[in-house]
Image (cartoon, rainbow, N blue to C red; front, side, top):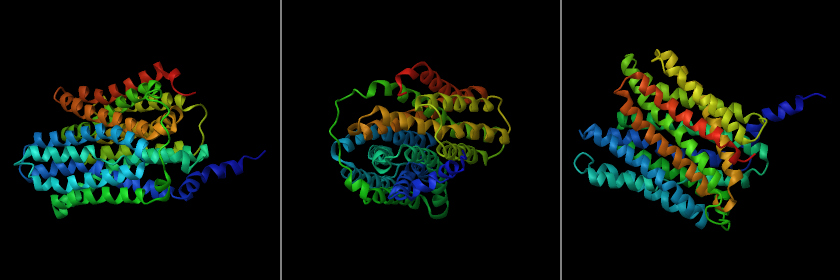
Length: 396
């Protein structure tokens, strides 16, 4: 029997998903609305430096934003599950945007406490667009095959936030000043949230009755802890790239190396979503974690820039499949009435890991290239150990 029709069906999966009603709009709106997550750290840094503030203050404010966003996501996700997506997004997005608009007026260099308050509000009020989108997928795409492809597209596209976001913030600052960067950060967040809020699926989405507190969290604690380790690896990349660029006198590497990681993630997401892979998501988590951890070993030898790019591309190619399998596991383990909060916890744990990875790698750089390169490998290896050791707790 010929398999050609099946191959054609698989080849059209992404087209079919993007052609489904509302999918392209929700994916695009979520991506645009999340750009402030990638823009804010560099916009804050450039704002403080423009006022001749200390680099330590800029780093502290950037870390505060990341920590506040990680804390706010599960809280807002719980509110989504209780009161609906529209209500939460219509409040959180304007609050976050207003905080970004007010930040330059605080004068971070002269009034760091006021600036910290604005950054704290912006982080806490970050609209939970990722969690909302993933809670919508089962209703938008009841077919498991299309949902698999959608989750791969979703996870692969997220890397674009951390490529386009910093480049956009830096470009706007260089061309039009720090005020323009802060304004664009606020406007894009509001515009992306508006695209989601005004969509029919978001308007129709109503919270389901909760199935009981906490019963879904047991096995997911293992997954969340493992993804914290994944976040450590991701958080170390920017520091590691900057360190390598300094040692090899290749300033371009500081931006291109994180971009290579994200590009690898996009390619991996496309490859993962093109077909249905054998085995349950729990098995996919282990397999992709092996590749993600192994990829970081290329950076242990303080490589030349070309090899360093490969050392970022390799683990990146396993990142989107790893995240897509994690999304599927959360969906299988969580009752519908708790989905937004569960996905928000996943986002928060990765964010906390990223903050820890940035801090650890910043400290390790002083000890030499090998300790710095060990930080992402250690985070990825810890994630792999957890997923292998407790794999039986995850859905088969």
